[in-house]
Length: 241
Image 1 (spheres, rainbow, N blue to C red):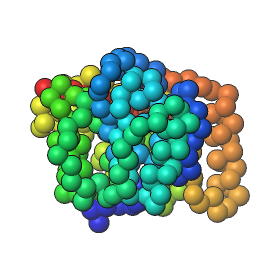
Image 2: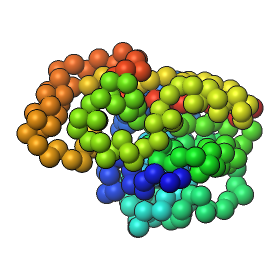
Image 3: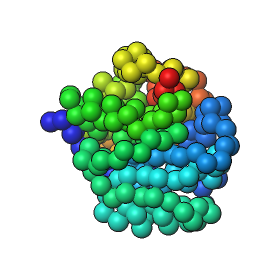
Image 4: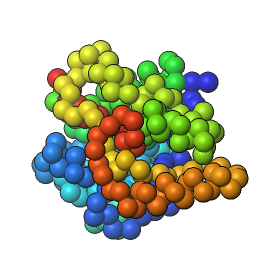
């Protein structure tokens, strides 16, 4: 299958309240600066947390696209809670969505890993085509490889099958950068080593015990050493030259 699973948003589908920080906010501050009259498009924008944070912090105008039912209502409620009264939110399948507009910032968070094969290539190409020259691209994905693969193999095999693990390596983004002549600004692993989230099938006592142990360790050990073996995310930021 080209589309491995539907993108429902690992933050959930409900609107959010005031957003003062997001998981990658420290990285955003290194590469984004507050500039008026710039545009941001988030692909897979439900529930709007990232879009709200980026736009209110760095003064981008807000635009987003997602196919989830009630996308406009969900995202606009989050944006409104964060003081953003004007936005353009599209309820559409990204691959079928046609838009000739170019943006200063195009971003997606936990989106591209839901597609494989030719469809994945089309998703990436479309991200880049939507950028202005000099615009910035931000893509983040979970890391389900190495030791994290073993953790999910024990706890949630279904989740492994629903994701394209090829997108979860630094070499994947190096190849994209070379193919599309992008200037890499940031490419690295990120997040607390023992962070676990969104597991769907804890069907036996061993799984529940293992999961609870990981949660306990995660609360005690908040180390953010960057390592392919245990870091929960990959963050890619590039500029279109």
